[in-house]
Amino acid sequence: QLQASGGGLVQPGGTLRLSCTASEISLNMYVIAWFRQAPGKEREGLSCISSSDFSGNPDGTYYADSVKGRATISRDNAGNTVNLQMSSLQPEDTAVYYCATNLGAAACWYGALSPNFHDYWGQGTQVTVSS
Image (cartoon, rainbow, N blue to C red; front, side):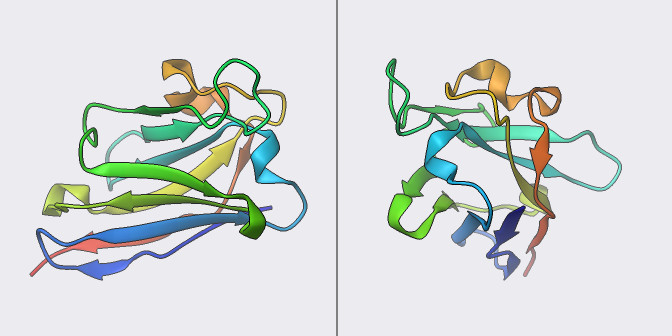
């Protein structure tokens, strides 16, 4: 099961690092994506990272325009963790953040930012940006 953590209350302009861990699968074998969902809005794909074993572009990354330039996704394979660091946070970044994977996929591409692409989700972690 995937588990997202690291959420909390942060002031506008602040930085947060979210972590996605798993107890039963090796995250480095699969594409991992981060999503968020604000109240009353659809789930939005933010970023993904390819499998470390992907022959095409191992650990390749992709970012949605909404977070490009202020988000960094990375792997800590020793810790079986995928991190998403976000900076310059604003109130509109307030949402529940989720990590997800498709256990049959290795590549990160824009299609991996569609919620329908993934079949394995963790519970979310709340991020609130407020002064």
